[in-house]
Image 1 (tube, one colour):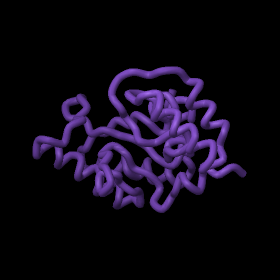
Image 2 (tube, one colour):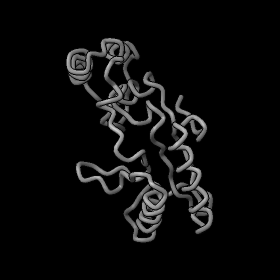
Image 3 (cartoon, helix red, strand yellow):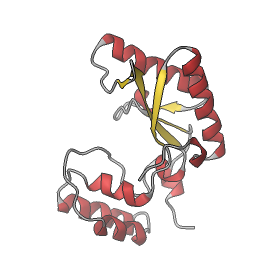
Length: 167
């Protein structure tokens, strides 16, 4: 199960996350941090969710050949089937959460999570969260162009492609 503890993040990311939470609190923006460090086994389960076996097999082959990580390929194949909607593009070892370099948080209104950004007032909460994350030195995935992930912030410049390589 993924951690929610800021202490499980790399020290520089944890420091920025604490500053983010303080800045949000100062502005009356209540946040719920729901994911910090995520084990690769959980990442494998999340990646499998909503995907056909053939696509999972292709990802395992990519992990095995391109990234030279047969351990992660075997893990992906062994965690068993998951059902439901897709929730991530990242296979095991391909998420910044696997290295303690990212966190996911959601703004709260009246104690309830605001997951959507469809309404202008909801979008404004997410935009403020993202701006404050950037102010403290984190990269906000709400500004990404390939896809957007409003809850996700991470260490700028970090690349899983470098971290996944066998040592």
